[in-house]
Image 1 (cartoon, rainbow, N blue to C red):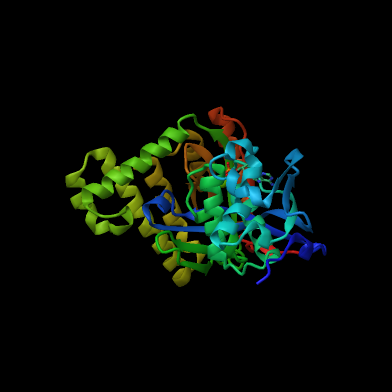
Image 2 (tube, helix red, strand yellow):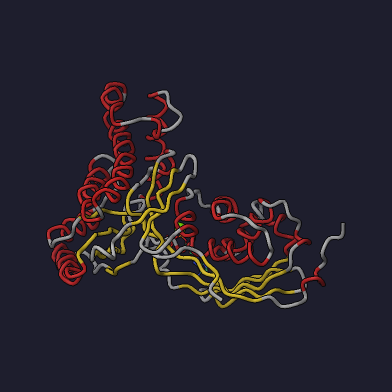
Length: 386
Ligand code: ADP
Ligand code: MG
């Protein structure tokens, strides 16, 4: 059998692919407990123009950085994960996806053509909208098509996670990649983080005349990294005390026993995760039975649980949620890892201006910096555009 050489690929194949950022509707700190999450893809996207090149090299460039990064495909295996520090951080995302994709499909670098990848994006970075999943998803679908690898969306999500974990060095779950790759217009991705079973579920915001507001507080509190590690450790401790592999294996009915067996802080961490898993399930069931106007109480309860039991909210997030609700939001909660970042509010389209003004006023009154407030629409996942 002959291996295709670079000459095989000298014809220029070109195209444009894109993948979106995401917002998590509900299901926070449940992913690493093998539980449930319910994110949706948004209309902000990262696009990549791809051109095939005949020399077996991969070059990535981005509107983020004037300097492109170029390596031989055959050298990716030497770079990742051990020598990843030699690559500028942003380039580790797309190069890491190329590396992880070849590994996952057991393809040699010589069996695929070199590529030029040019990225542009309107996904705000670091606003909790997962610009990282967007660049990973765009890269993964583009390379999967052009390299003819035939991987399904779940496999591509795993490739994105591996790139982020091993090539970038960020210990993240798989929610963001699944949301970005599987999204559908006006739908969310209900995901079981243990089995990776995903159900794309109608949200029905548009027909109900609802908008989803993102309130980016623009604050990141210093203890976010340590706080995240402490929460993960508490969850592991709680699961060990209860003798289960993960908190996912507990239900609300197990909480009284948990309370007897553990200290108060550990118990409250456990109670957040267990009740949050239940709220995700309830949100999916409520959407199906009664539509999106009925999920407000679940969003509110999720916020209260993160504020009081998981203790990952901050005054800016609480202010955003309370002001949005007081101005007529159907429900509101902080979203993302906590200690800053963004809140979301489900709002009647006719109230968007009022809720926005109310939140801005509450921030000003509290002496906080102005938040960045905008709407997002549940949108289509990764795709080929041209
Ligand atoms: P987010 O919450 O936005 O996902 P992350 O820290 O996980 O924040 O990922 C952001 C990083 O992803 C950026 O700092 C950059 O390294 C990389 N990135 C995202 N989008 C792009 C892009 N269009 N071009 C280059 N790098 C990008
Ligand atoms: Mg990210």
